[in-house]
Every structure is written in structure tokens, then in C-alpha cells.
Image (tube, rainbow, N blue to C red; front, side, top):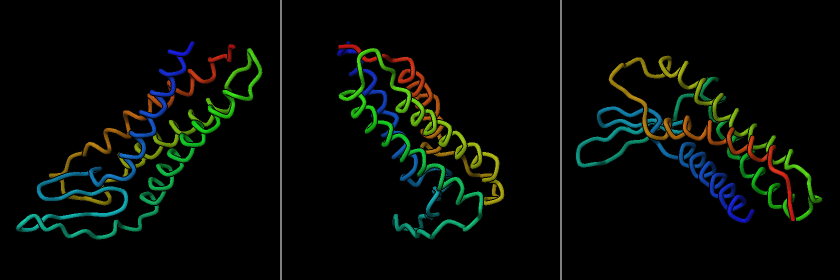
Length: 159
């Protein structure tokens, strides 16, 4: 049972790290001497000097920002609730609340990545850009968060 709890906590922390990195790092779109994320657009000029400007104020980009922040909040809240329920839940009880918040985190990151996928062409019309690693990490965090949430719902507390 201890190994199962440790595995679940490691999975949850891995999801949290993926969510934090994908929300913070400036690598959602990358190109030659260019990187963009949810918060700023950076271009590298001669001598490795980076000029960063605030991202556009498109409504769809603000919804991506909001849903990524919500996914981080839901996942942190889920981890906190898991530890609270671990010590207060009666024997045989299920971790429903923890699982629901973790599934909400997964659905939020999926929504953010889907909106970004569908709408980023409105933001950058040039086609020599590709998706960066932070965008890919957001998509990797989606199934892991859902898996973690489902495991929490199935999990029963034992002595």
C-alpha cells in the first residue's frame, strides 16, 4: 500500500511539474531566432540579445492563459486535498474530491492546448514556426492528469 501511495504521489508531482513548466516556459512556438509562449514573444538578435514583448491581447490567448492557470490551481488543490483526505478519510472511503479536481486539471490543460492549436495561426501567420517543447509538455500532462484523477477516484483508503 505504501508503494502505491508513493507511486500516486510521484505521478501527481510529475503532472504538477509538467503543468508549471508548460505554463511558464517561453517555448510554445519556436522558429529561427524566435520563441513565443502564452505571456511574451521573444526574438534573438545578434549577439544572443533577446528582445521580448508582451503577447497579443487576443481573447483566445487570454482564455488559454486562464485555463492553464486553472489547471495548475486545480492540480495543486488536488494534491493538498489528497493529503488532507489521507489523514481524515474513514477506512474504505474513496478520494472522490481529489480525483474530481485532478480530472478538472486535465480537462483544463486539454482545453488550453486545443484552443492554442486551433487559433495560433491567427496570431502568427508565418509558417516557418513549429510547436515548442512546452506545448508538447502541456499535451503530455493532459492524459497523465486524467489518469491520476481516475486512480484517485478508484483508490480506497486502507489502514
